[in-house]
Image 1: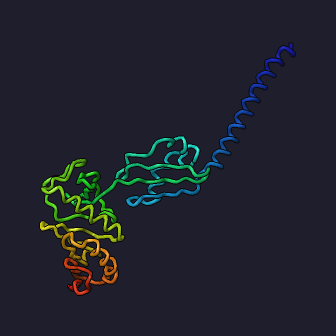
Image 2 (image 1 turned 90 degrees about the horizontal axis):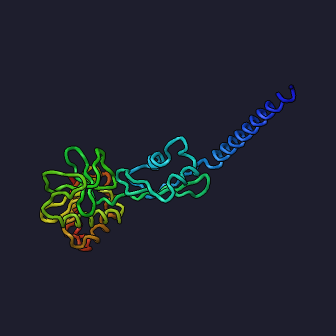
Image 3 (image 1 turned 180 degrees about the vertical axis):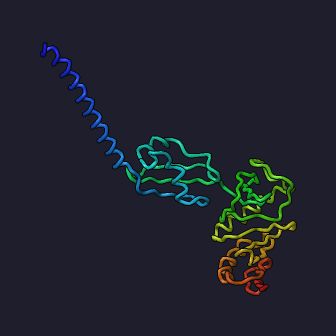
Length: 248
């Protein structure tokens, strides 16, 4: 009788022991994975609108957001979209504790201020984003005439060719690493740049010698950081006599 009772009990105990061993193995495996694949180093490239920390917080979400194994499955073969100002983001696992996030931002030519909102548009004048905050690397464009703005549609300006001119100017600002507060496009085609909280107005004139004008501006502008006035470069031809600064 006791022998008959022992067999089922021994079987239950053996089964329980096996389950405990399996659970212990799984727990140890989980601890190993958790420790070995915890991300401690994150490289972020290509971001200007968002900080590195903001990008990390967008990508490394959830309870396992700092686990490279989880991230490799989550983002394998696909990017991250749906983020304002960002076309897509790619996540690359460099090692168990290191990842790289590459940000591909939307190509923005400029923005206009409309009803207390900054409306960002691309090279074709299509409004791609709206924000209550200005992005320092994207100049505010003034001088354009329009009566309404619709997201994902072109700005309703009379001369659509002005967007190429805007892109040319913003590309030159990027080329010489100049950060203008705003860019004024006048009806006659002349351009005025404003720097240092609008303390310095730079009259660039038309397209003639525009690259040379920016080259000269790049050398002069740092000397004007503590001044207020107007720098006249519209007639610049390479001669110092054609560079005029008028204090105000």
